[in-house]
Amino acid sequence: MVEYMDVVDDLDEVMGKVSQEEIYEKKLTHRIVHIMLINPKTKEVYFQKRSEKKKFLPGYYCTSAGGHVQSGETYEEAARRELREELGLSVNVEKVAELQFITNGHKRFIELFLAFAEGGLNFTDGEVESGEFLNMEDAKFLINQDEKIHPQLTLCFNWLYENKNNTEKSIVNSPSK
Image 1 (tube, helix red, strand yellow):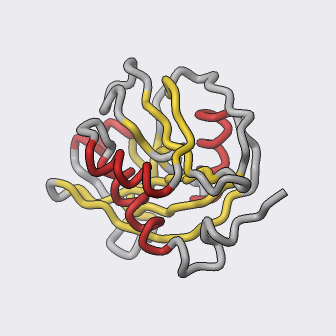
Image 2 (spheres, one colour):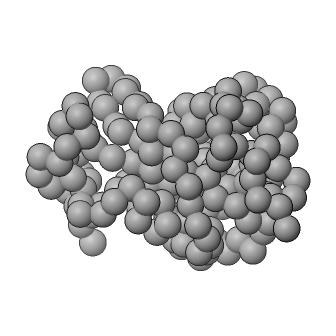
């Protein structure tokens, strides 16, 4: 099945839609979402380990869930879809940051979301091999020490770590049961 994505300009305004393959062949600017799942009781963050069957960065640690925003989809819709597809969760998401990621002249707009759940994860689509909840310091250590870290995990986690006490939607202020 061909996945279509919106091509956007430098202001994140939609200019058209093309296949995912064309996005990467031509290094077209597009949209991505990442979700950091927080355990509301322990304040730990969940990192997923990508399946070894993934075409791009197999076996790498990544954000709790994430992926491309499909053509016509909002960032929030994409975040909810990715959580369902990758972790089997249907929970609320809260946007906490708008980021940009540029490698080799290829620009992506990223919206970072938080979601809260204690567990109940279900890896049904084969994209996720495993994962674990980590406290913030252990997560930071892993990112700094492990070679198999998705570069967008580094971007998103570093933003979260630096802002964990500076936002209403921070880990510190997450809802508790």
